[in-house]
Length: 624
Image (tube, rainbow, N blue to C red; front, top):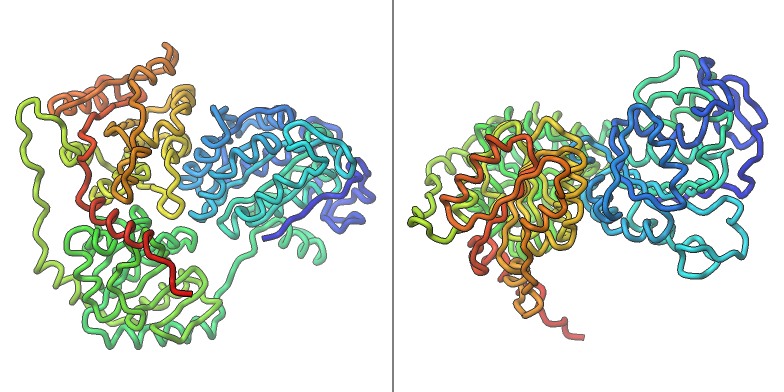
């Protein structure tokens, strides 16, 4: 983690404007000679930042206006390739950038100083936990106010502007405070490249008086992140590489060879090895390499719950989700009885381990993290990239399908929920049976924290179907903003969001933004009267919430503007009719289906998981 703060002399002119030359502060001031004329409206900090966002693949920025960021927003709007989406609050703007980053690989949000920054902080922390590169941009104080004893609004009343920065230091991998045009170019480019390199959020604060001021460092089209200039001096080339581009990580060749040799020896002598994909496959960009390894070795292939959607479930050796006692049918039996297991990118926390109850043995495991491999109780190999390791390992393993053959022998196809009686109260397992039928390569599933975690895990994803949920951070309400961001990032997919009533009450406002953007997601609002996941961990009156008329609320938000359709369903017949309407006559609308179910109607997996997590939470203190 690194923080860079500009100097206080915000309007000092550059000392050298020659092509490829270095000004006194050591930053490459210009790269190419096809300049945007200096003093042009496009040679400003605001337009430079906008162009950089477009270059890395961001075409939508989620924002909440405030007096410190208004000028910056003007310049973002002026960028032809950038669409500014106003959200109802900063938390949802951050969640939307999170959802967008899951689909596009990077997201961005813009808020105002402190009141906006601290509001978006929770969403940025979630993105950090999920290894998502989110560019969080904050409109900051006037550059002339830094270093003075002035007290500004939107602060806690002290002449100290660093409170927001200090909060972001623990949940971002780089922080840039841009209050000086001289080094603004370098700070912005370093922040963005660091986000891409580390796959973590970054924080960029831009003084409110700087976005509109032309400066020589912005008088040229910025060099794309994806290509190098044809002619640069050696000195400028080195500055260019380290300032403008994500540093390419490389495996240590000797370490890679040693790790592969040790892993191949370990796995080739096993009788029934398996492989399990974890959530860090995404940050390691190793999903394809993991599948290639499965193709070559024939091992039974499973995923951890937070990796669902990262590995194709139509793979011939896929056996489901490994989640300890709440795994999909027959998966845990195969994984935990294996004599060797390769975990690629796992996160073993109290939730993913079902209250630390996994029946795994360290001496049987190979743990592959994005840049490290640990085999059994040792040895460990550092500076070995997961992608390189998996590709090289695939060439050294002997085919072994024993574990998959065992799975195939014991597997019994899923049963079906009991047939509903006419007009019988709708059951959750019947609901998800019908959601399963909705899925295709043109859909994506967003699962909110709660019982939807467990019900959605049992969905079988067709080829091309997206799937996202926030397991590590588990912030209720995340799915509303994430649905907004994901749907905006992938407009050719129809997002199916499964959201509990308690979670929806946290972030409901940005259904409004979905309507403004013309999105056509299907939201299943599961109304069971409270925080069901909390009930199964530890019940109490605080888990009961005030019931809302959810369809009426969404109708009020709709207010005749945009395409929206709402309905309540209480039985299977009404659910079937609602889904037919949502996929037929109202397929171009945002469809909000409130599903009313019994408060105690939960998945069996939540009941098991909740009791084990409760036991872990209630462990007495160790003796002193």
